[in-house]
Image (cartoon, rainbow over all chains, first blue to last red; front, side):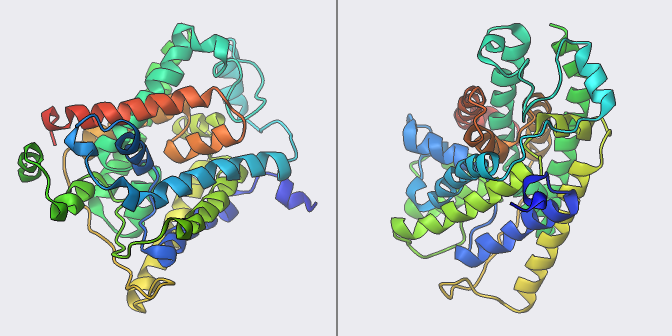
Length: 187
Length: 172
């Protein structure tokens, strides 16, 4: 197969393709691109528990669940059929910093030393996977959207609240990655 | 604030949209009642999107760390060019009043500001830097075989549920 299909794509190829998801979903059926809502629909479908926030016709929004199912399938296809299997390139400064916490060479999408079943029962693994996941779910719904809904769809439609949200995503991430995470990784 | 007062009452059918719009930029503007089988086209769109996420490496924990440490331009390039293309597409759709494949006029909802975008935004930022994934990548990572991410996804669903539960007591 063509080498360019197997290698990671540069930002100027991948970015515009991600941007095209916006008109694609609008043309397919008037759907505003957004992914974190799927988590809400899952709650509404599986355990609404009488909470008013989850009392709505989630079936009307089920396109979103089809979409995220597809994203999972796409992940499988890309890794099994469109990948050279080479280790990801990582900035040497990051590699050096991670090795001081005992996080070894990059092998996949996530560091195996941090995201493993054994790690889940350590303090830092719990913080990364369980606390991190909770914050993603809680924060995106509180903010009313995630990177796709606010940063891409919202900014594409020139919504200033989405710009506020995007700045806060970045500020939060910046704070966590540079000041809190280094401490958590030593746990 | 008025939306919060609405919540304590039983929600009639016509305010269903309001409940949805307080939540999301991700509003389904379609008035059509689509049959279930017609929704597979969104799954197909999802497959394409999932492939792009992996090939762009935006689902990599390392890329997210590099972004927040300003060690790589990659993520900024991806997001920036995605917004540029999205912006242009939306402009063209509006200018030429392009319709959906079913002939429905395309409608985009405006997003109202509330403080949740600040507090929630910061909290999501924390989570993004910890997990190295926003919601889309969680699904792609699981499909790619990173099975422990199932725990992260379940935790994200729990977080969403907790927000729904405490919503009326949070500042908005």
